[in-house]
Length: 247
Image (cartoon, rainbow, N blue to C red; front, side, top):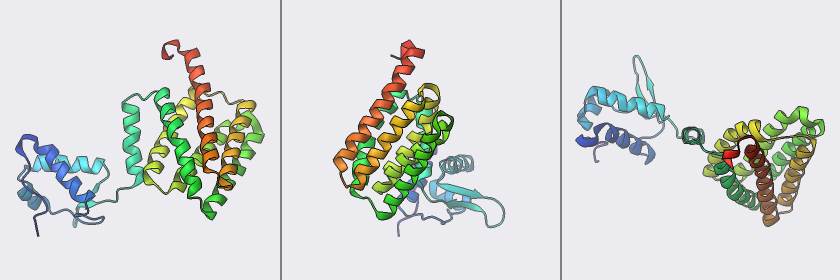
């Protein structure tokens, strides 16, 4: 059996230690719940210093790939790679790169229609029930008008995330979860949600779910794309009014 690790490359020793352990987790040589070799053994295998090894383990812990337990029987234990972990990394990317409303709008207009199309093709009875339950919830909020804007937008987000879940694709689920959790600050800044806009938003959601229920994937896709495009247009117009340089 080949050794778990090799001596780290001396010209990039810290990153190489991180990369080797990360790859061993990702490719399954180290499985969830496995304990990494003891520090003395890891140092010998990687031929690195204690300080470099400990810093690399801290980075891996920050990434959510391992958990470092203290005390008797402690050590570095492999954790599961979850969609939430991926979403957190994407969230940091969006925030650190100053992603604009235009960037998110461009992404959503193209991707969310495709997600709805796939979700329609993969619709399950339980998914149909879940969508209808969320739609009924959105209707109740819409009937209350602007005073229920926050609750309506939360349900709107949950409907879009339900579309993603129905695809069964963890990449869509993770990415769209992050997008919808980040877009709320743009809603707060630029989205006017009076009675007319709320009714319009609800009607779009109702039409998408109706088309999905009939198995009409192309119509569902077209409605979803038009919905995202229209409301992004409203926000971009408001953004230009408040910040002409953004136009």
